[in-house]
Structures are given as structure tokens and as C-alpha cells.
Image (cartoon, rainbow, N blue to C red):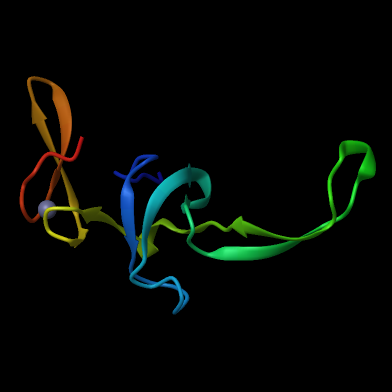
Length: 108
Ligand SMILES: [Zn+2]
């Protein structure tokens, strides 16, 4: 089964992929678990051609769209460590909390 400890809204850093995206950080805007992919704001921008549709008031042309990238190519970005980190789960009083593997700070 596919799974990730990342959540929508998390800050992540790109570790693998296009040169222009590597090392960039962004917010997770969507997680496509069934595809093992993730969409991060301002990362992996694709040019998409949109056909004009006057009835729907859509102007044709090239638009930028964020493409999905493999979940494995990003890491959670810990603000305290200032780098990509692994996430650990700690269970306390039956409550799951995500913590930074490095500085042990709670991430939620
Ligand atoms: Zn940390």
C-alpha cells in the first residue's frame, strides 16, 4: 500500500528531479497517493496549451500548471533544521504526532 507521512500544506524540499526544481522548497497542494505522486506549489511547472472557448470566456494560449512529481523526490522541510528531514511518528496517549527525525520538534 502506498503511504506518506506528508500532508497537504506541509513545506517540502525537492531532493531529486529537474535542475531548476532541485533544492527548492514549496507547499504541498495535493497528494495523489494512488499514483505515489505529489503536487507542490511552484514546483515542476508545465506549459499547457489551452484551447480558446469564447462561450466559457476562456482565452486560449499557454498556461502554467504544476505537475505531479514522485513523492520520493521530496522531503519534509524542517524550519528548525533548515533542511530536508525524515518524519518520525510518536504515539502519546493514543495520539499520533509527527516529529522531526533530527531536532525532535513536533511538526503538527
Ligand atoms: Zn528539525
